[in-house]
Length: 443
Image (cartoon, rainbow, N blue to C red; front, top):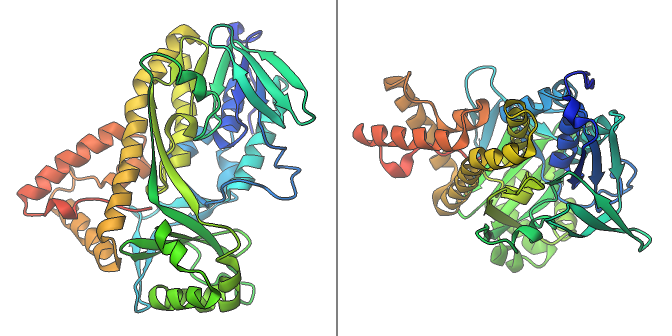
């Protein structure tokens, strides 16, 4: 892997970039800035997950697609991460009667990758650490920072406070960003957050006789109108199953027998695969987790600070683009750094101008898919959508590109993909296709 800094600009050498947040986007950003020759300080409130016995935080399996892979490629990490992912060429739709129906993600050879969040984070932190100009600081909780000077105050594990000065602060500290709090004090900063009524719960489907319990190269989906379950394969031959359901439905299931009764009614084929005893136990292991959508603008404050990843645009996980959008943030910023010769006073406003409409578009798409799922997504609807897509593609092969393809397998800007989708929808209506049947594709 190429971690050289030969292409770094001379202006980078003495500038300090503080990356706040050592998650996926923060760790990748550290690689980008270090590759340019900046002095990079990464600050993470948690302990080093590479040494942690138990990794706290979200564990929804991640679907890595083209945008994320292109971002990893620029810092020499694509092959490493892809080699530890499992290709998923199709969705596998599980009907209530047990019928399984595959729906390919795209053309032959196109696939998304199931990757483990914790392993990906560890790999990126280790990659960042290979640069001599990078220092990783764990157990550093941000208390405050100055928009005028770039000075930051951190609370250390032992209770001591530490002040750090940086030329640029990069806020990659998630949906509940401490960096973003200072933005909220600024005039004309727009911010919104929306919690959806659904929560999610994770369950593990173990191997059977040392092999995957279901076909591994698929993202398995059980669509059931107001709720659904998905399952992604892992390298240890398990599947991580995620149940998405309204919180009030979760609250109605209070005993092990009710869990089995619920699964027998809606996911009967999953019971023997997960195991009745494990299902009764694991369902109550952790409470259902909330999902939030965050939108804001601008993404920068003068030439001192910029937000990326969930700190700028947390999205609900119904388009499989949360991580990919965050990784593409790093790539887009890097491209603008090239165009504007690393001049932060020009790069930061340009990044906001370019990126806000795209991140808002994918946040809206993910929410749109959530609403679609909540209203009428079941296995028959899912399968019918594929027939509609094929029909439109057949009659207009050069002009109709499915939205999912544009979003997942190209770097077409998100907001431009949405514009084209609307245009194609109008063409579909002219051909007699109801707008309620237009191109949506969960996961």
